[in-house]
Image 1 (cartoon, rainbow, N blue to C red):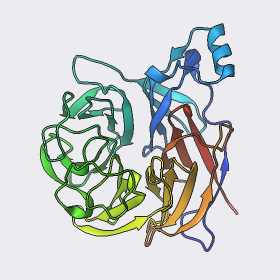
Image 2 (cartoon, helix red, strand yellow; image 1 turned 135 degrees about the vertical axis):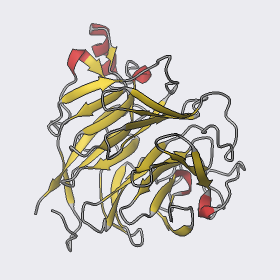
Image 3 (cartoon, helix red, strand yellow; image 1 turned 45 degrees about the vertical axis):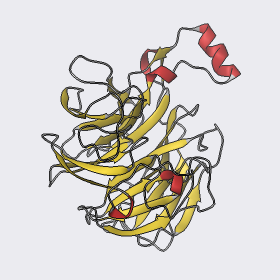
Image 4 (spheres, helix red, strand yellow; image 1 turned 60 degrees about the horizontal axis):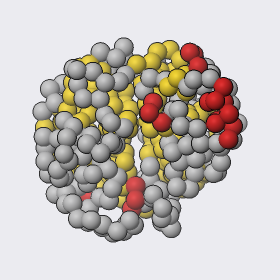
Length: 343
């Protein structure tokens, strides 16, 4: 399916994906997912959380054998085989204290961030895990107009033609910030509605707030150059030009409180990218939205731990065939695949 049809796309869980990890590895909180040009699926997870059993079954299993946490960055093929895994601390860069977000640019470079208490950096690697670039630095967090460090960054997207990386910054700061993707040089930044960001302590939910709440949880660049930003706790997606000029916004699941509704998004595979797929971690579901106005036209998922259900749905990504991949945090600790059903 390559074009928009009268009916929204339909999905079915693929319970065989991914296959069991080698070496008795366990996955922890899965805090990011991305698809590369080969339709390989990349997941970033938190090894420090992999060996913390949360159910009686997991406690019994962990008592039988020593738990081995998987490396934080994992690459899978379409059938769920683990192709490679790497990542962790090094003297060459500052690995984040709590992994968060993964993006693969069209040149194949892997970008990862973190939202630990002092995480103020974003990292770039080759697919094999060779370090290329660090933007920002860890340490005492500052404010949303400091261009030398980030503030618990959540996500990124890359404009290859312009050699720019856009970072959703983040759990501490209230902005989108853009750097040169080759040199790491600062370019520009903005807050909600394209304004200079502020750092006022907002109440949890305020969909008319003049600044982003925390976290600024995702950033995605459409083929037509529009930039989509997840203002998670305010239940809204704001849309900008690449220079930070505000275009419009969508309020999604207005009645949601808790941790907000707009956790992540990706685009449908037609040339116009006419649909958005929206990850809603508070309501445990994926929604299909019209990109032109944010109207919801379909949903799937519910709260639970069975295949096809979600606990703290955190991220999603779409491959070139329209299949959707998701990751879960808290005690979800997994990635799932939802196959596009051809009808």
